[in-house]
Image 1 (cartoon, rainbow, N blue to C red):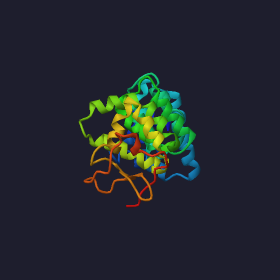
Image 2 (tube, helix red, strand yellow; image 1 turned 180 degrees about the vertical axis):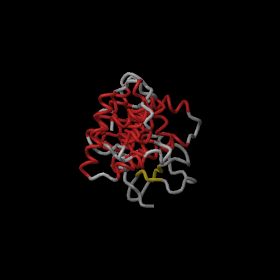
Image 3 (cartoon, rainbow, N blue to C red; image 1 turned 60 degrees about the vertical axis):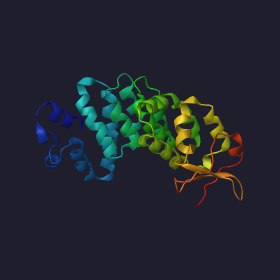
Length: 261
């Protein structure tokens, strides 16, 4: 694979760099897509070795700008073939530069699953000096998906970049609503407790989330006074108002249940 990329990108060998699979190359507009076509014809064992090779080559190349084209192809290919093996090396590609940040974030998010490797990868990207607030929402959603029990910690850890991102977006941004709804989808209401909401209220960087969840008639959640008791529910009809979080008494110290209606 490394020789093929070098021959194709640096030695003008074209499709012949990947012989005897040259008939797959230059068929599509993207080299990573062409390589996926080769991958799909391999045996399961060969596919496993390809995924490991993608990881190993990325680890050797690192953020070297002279190898940037091959690195970009490999990052895209990793997402296309679901090469979870690369999660351990993706953070190293943005450790010293933000040149590959967009690709690395999107590939890490695409490969995110409830594994320690995915969690560690996203945390390292989040804490990288090259990390940008532009990607805070995507990384936050991925972390909540990977580690739903720790969702509140993730919201707090990304509070400052999310506040920066919210300040860049227009009022009532569909992007912020997408992130707020995505967090609910990742954690489910069974993990949302009144103590968590009170903790969020004390975080200046979480204002955007509370606004999307609980503020006004278009909020994602509604407050019901019962029976059988007070609780928060997913809002089915945004035209009705069922309360506010302005009073502590509106959020009971009980588990917030998912309402079926």
